[in-house]
Length: 256
Image (cartoon, rainbow, N blue to C red; front, side):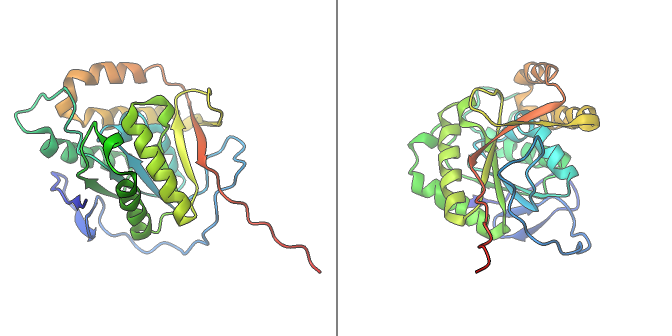
């Protein structure tokens, strides 16, 4: 299964890897940073990451469910790339005259640009049926993205919060992360499964404003947007994360 490059209405975009659409023009090369594994104990902070790969089941999740976390990660200087495994064609909402598999990836590109995501790839697995796709195929696609992007962490939606497609994504992404030797973290809606709280602090208000704009970019889903945005009004100034694949702490051997 291959990713499809899609055209975007936003200017200044270019293809920089096979199957990946860059959302920003090339910037000056930043000062080289030494890669460090995210700490197992976060003490209420975001995991340290230079290159995070965001993996979602369908367009829209990056905004409604992960928007606050993505905004916060971008503020730390992390580079973010996104892989959606489907085009979101199974949605029951479509306020346009175009097929969803055509318009939703374009909406995703707009939303991703607002959230500060640097590149997007869209795979063609069937929306709503990821649980029936061979896990090995999902794992291979995600692992390939990790290698292409030199990711050092994988971010996804907590499978405990969503439908079976989200479970399939989490299983595949976690397996790919383990194969690559990377940690995987999930944004979770409740503390029922543990994790820790990240306080957005003074950035909470602009984070939620950007998140609402990103949600609104999915115009084909306008019939459902009012309810989604209303649900975001109850979000507070924090986000909850939990490790699905904890980072491995490297222990320095004692001197002999």
